[in-house]
Image (cartoon, rainbow, N blue to C red):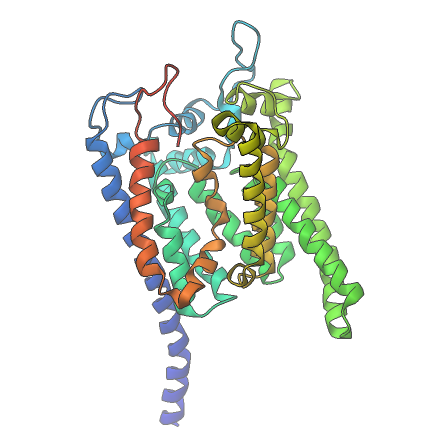
Length: 407
């Protein structure tokens, strides 16, 4: 009797030990990445001269609060304006409506409970959200790979050239957590559980449109499978996914327009959100055109068209690569939808590198190359690129009359 009880106890204890084991490994990789990013921030801060946010050689807390961190803090302190600010010509100028409310709202709620301020809570929320995102990313990667490969994929994300953004007072970490959670739930077939996550994600970053595109891709794939599959079981399974995918697409679309509608209701101007976003561009939004104009301004129209053609061909070739196809249908659909969204609505500029972070599922494809042996070369290169990103883009230098290039 005692032997049976001991065997049962050992059997139930073993999965717990394994679970703790992978959690500790993922968090160890994540912490190693944050230590590297912290060292890079500290080194770059010693090279920082006077800036709009601090004097020369600022401390760590001041240095990570550069750029859009100030806008999030302003939302934390003041909220959003009921009347859009305008310049002398009546054009909408920079204001808080360009930034979604979930991240500063979460920090504000924690401040009400703890009594702590923005400078303490905002970086903590970012780091904790990024740590949680790493755990969810691992679980997502494990749906398509073994433990070692999934852990390597987490390492690629943790040491990526823009991974330093995961510990600054930006919404990127919180958005990464929600995005990874939504992709994991959809990949697991839990479409209804993903819906509230998608709504929250749409209040953290403008992710509703690309997620709706990805859901549309998944719906069309299910429709095609239901009509073409020879196996009745496969057809039935595909048909059963169509309704929840359709509803998820509706929810994603609602999440895409929720914040612009809230801005309209609060300000009385239906273009409040778009007008605020384009205030940073200095021109109206015309889908796809900036991707032709930006390279044309640097290398000329003909060469610029070749650059765009190379980007398109490269993107198509990337999705045809076996390593990228191996990441799974749902992460692949998201990456395709997100790239299409960027092509239509993003203005290519220095912040483009940071905006590519939601393509994190591609880290699993990188981790599978040469069975992961490439990481011994890739990760050091990522660290060097991360230092260059912090030192050249996060750090501020008066390179232009109207200010520096944003990260």
